[in-house]
Amino acid sequence: MTTIKRIIPCLDVDGGRVVKGVKFEEVKDAGDPVEFARRYNAGGADELAFLDISATSKGRATLLDVVRKVAAEVTIPFCVGGGIRTVEDMRQTIKAGAGKVSVCSSALARPQLLSEMASAFGSQSVVLAIDAKRVSAKGQPPVWHAFSNGGRADSGLDAIEWAIKAAELGAGEIMLNSIDADGTCAGYDIALCAAVAKAVSVPVIASGGAGSLEQIAEVLKETGVDAALVASLLHFGKTTVPEIKQYLALQGISVRQ
Image (cartoon, rainbow, N blue to C red; front, side, top):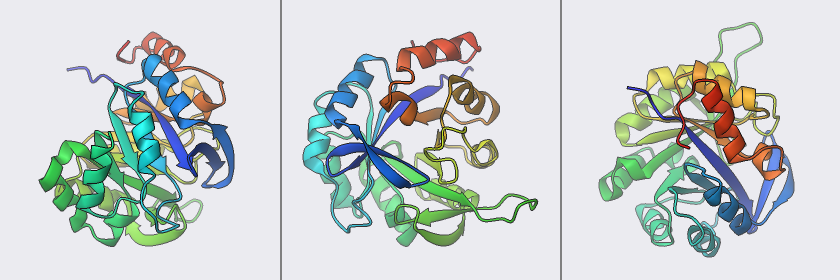
């Protein structure tokens, strides 16, 4: 059976605005999340991801008022992450309009949270975000660790082993972000995506590095991931969701038109 690959625009939100950085630094303003949500929903995006990137580092809750405004604009699946630490936080986020939530630092701090969330809302609503960074020396076999706190703290956990454990605990999907590739527009970390997709049976979303239509096609064709997250390419008007899907279809990749 042919898997239909998904294209997921990602809104990294800070202070109520969409921002974009490079390798989690040099963050600059990109625009209004409500406006972007409206555009991507109308353009045929398969899902929308909303990540409140400063909630964890600032120790605050997700900006639910912004989540509500974005949710009002979309009819596609909507995933929200950032600052979600408890099942109650998840409940409030879903109540605000999210269909599923993603957790990163809070799950690393207490893995059992994944089981509690899956038990309360079902695995299909639980996405584990892994911010992975290569820690092996150049020329050595690649090793990636899962980082927390917006890519600032090395958990010491092998990213592939963490993905396997998270799926066992109840995560229904893995959002795999390469810190090394993030915002560079130099392409996804193909080796990382392939390794994680091969290791788990749940869907994997590739994130970090999309800079061209060819790179999106490459990660979807070569690694076994189920979806590609796209940010800078879309936010700064270099392409559109319909253009991405048209190109992928021409490359023989099955997408929902």
